[in-house]
Amino acid sequence: MIERRPFAQLGHADHGWLNARHHFSFANWYEPTRMGWGDLRVWNDDEIAPKSGFPPHPHADMEIITYVRSGAITHQDSLGNTGRTGAGDVQVMSAGSGVRHAEYNLEDETTRIFQLWIQPRTRGGEPSWGAKPFPKADRSGKFVALASGIAGDEDALPIRAEARVLGATLKAGETTTYDLGPGRHAYLVSAVGQVEVNGVTLSDRDGAAAKDEAVLTVRALTDAELVLVDSL
Image 1 (cartoon, rainbow, N blue to C red):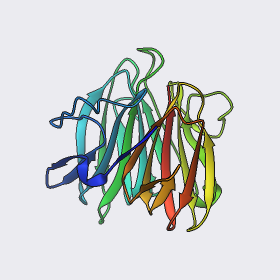
Image 2 (cartoon, rainbow, N blue to C red):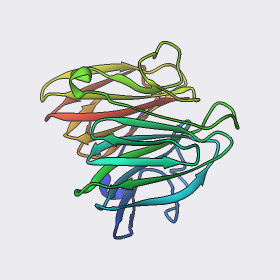
Image 3 (cartoon, rainbow, N blue to C red):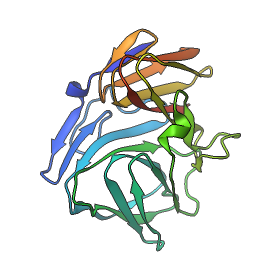
């Protein structure tokens, strides 16, 4: 089963400095049929105006993965971590027993991110943060794990969940596949470009919710940049 979630039908909140789309219920947008997909609880598609951002706020018991589509995001937290994550790269915060953080766009251009929240295996634990570059050339024509709590994904940023976040870039006409294990859920978004997923066509920033599909076959109709979450 694959259900297309058109970009135009996502939840929407425009705060001036933040123009946000929500694939799942979030903040003031509540849709009871979209409370998450497997352990994936939040997928926000955020556009953050220059010289603005999210002031310090708390989180607990959530794995928060930020994929930067363009621009850059600068992170600060109550653990003393700071860092700038640029386009195509990824940062991960394991909120654990509790942490406060801020995320700012200190650039002169709009920053565009996907922010994903995944439920952890267990509650509590020491909070942590990390970031890593993932050159797009290294994921050309194939899915590469960017953040993962699954054994064998040593090159990915670690998360405390039975899940992985993957990225791929495809040229128009290229096809790649991803094996989805029994009982698992996949959610795929094309950050850029039009693709077909097992025959279902997705345009820019549409979502595709998949389960009970042994293999996902993704064919690029145009040059495309993809992000995929595989979770229980």
